[in-house]
Image (cartoon, rainbow, N blue to C red):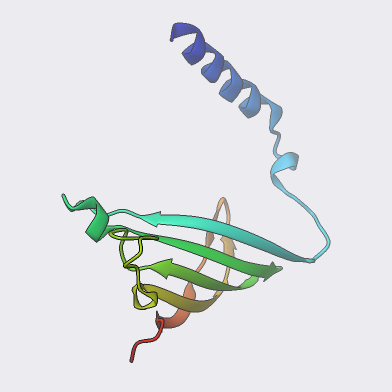
Length: 119
């Protein structure tokens, strides 16, 4: 365990030393980039299956703009079982814009969606 921690610290240190101020600024031509993200939203409830949910998000970005489609399930209980219903799943479309502010990027977004096959 001691060797693993030492190797981890050394790797982080080498990565830190390898970065210079110029390497943090990336200059690229503007292009459309796609992404795919898997999410697991976790709460502090004692009922893990009923209070947490999965989502899959796919989208595209261009410069600081982006758009995505999210597909998810309201909770984990009964997921992929024989009694699973389409009404437990939702779709959401969203758009966002990133504002670079020094070392961080503020990304407000707006989305609209709902559960499938429900009013």
